Image (cartoon, rainbow, N blue to C red; front, side, top):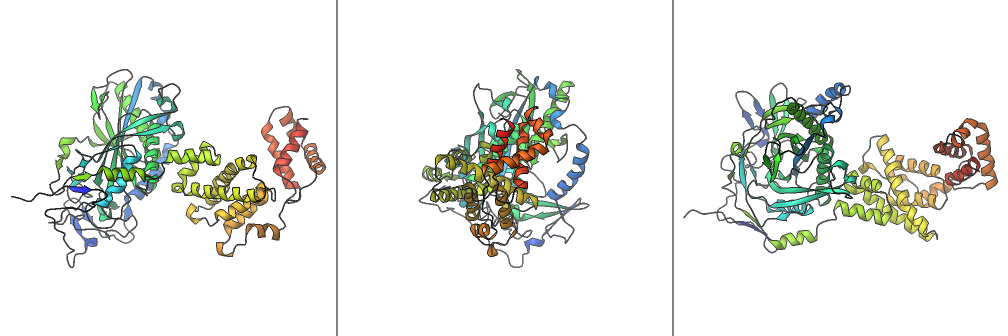
Length: 609
């Protein structure tokens, strides 16, 4: 009787892999996988990197896109072309497939390490290179971040899932097939909740009084990634097998998206969720997350071509646009394909089911090939891999220990720190939430400092969150942007910023002085810096307020010198120019003697007696 592989059972009590028959092949002596060559009649595929000759495909595409962007600026954007008046007649439907690299130490079916920055072909196991006799060995630890991702999207975890082979032939797939979970994925029936603050199109909200919508998740499946390809002109492709068998999850939404903006917001929300639960660390900006979009249109109120996708009936014929690598690319590609399909149908044509491409800066999609189906890929169960059994105990444990999700974090930030929704979402979206953590710690420190000074009334406490958020977002953010530095390069500590802002709130310094000190802290080496208080005292920067009479005298002299500005505010209602007078008062007075708030109060009294 032939030996059969036993199921892989995953639970908290028993987390070992069981096989009735499994061989682990040790590396062969003398094998140098970094220099294997694959030759063919049409192309030569090499894994050895030619010095100063290889051009990464992603970089090449970006360079080519720069030229296209220049010419596209003078053309109409996809969202403003002639198809727009017809949008009331035609309904867009979009389904999205998101491929995300999991945060794991090892590959999906080998013990080779995962790495985004290693030298080409440094981490390649025998199975990754499809060497004869090598077999896949599922690494159970890769399932944990996948489960966290599925739970973050409220999916039903399946107690049993299995592996299938998806056959296709391309140079980046050495086995000639991809191992995936087509028939029995590990997670089904999830959902995403998106609000207007997530960037969805308001027209997609159909229920009166609602502020958001729900997008269904059909399933989430694990699968292996492919090799990375770099073009060496004119016809040589260099292959990096480090990425082969890197664990991926494919998140498949239901076709319930009806606008380009909502499509982009959906991908953005998925990335945010994946990062928040530590399932993924690399986003679209580094190639760790890619999206395929399925686009169809139909006349509103019609049954389309009576097509059915993922249980949704009456849709038009769909096309698929693959490998979109940014949120803007998702929005622009959906817009371009929507407009193309409407134009074809309005002209009496027929939409063909096909795979299409879209490039950065383009205003239209291009045909790549006919759309493959289940028969074309010749799906079959993988005979080398047993099914995966997931215990409810493990699922419950992961659900209880799941990190805080973005919506909860933003809600808590709004309640605890009094930030605006815009500031809270902006802080959360920057630097994987590190800027928000920095802000939260600074708020606590400032609150403690002003409390110690007896300034802990409710009015001051309410100002702390907004003040800190403004300085972190705009003042520190502006400094970083001005010289192209990253958040990780910042050396200003939360204690230093808190000390500066506490002095500002207690009216020990002016905002102008505070910005000067912040610039000094930003420019100086952290090892040689003196404290904020010492800096204020040594520079004689503490506020030396002038009297009310001196405020009035200074303000009146500026108003007398600028009658046109006074007329603009009083007679023409241009109240925004009030701050111009405030700026003049701060500049003309001796350093550290005029507070902007007090100056504004005096100016308004004189302008509007």
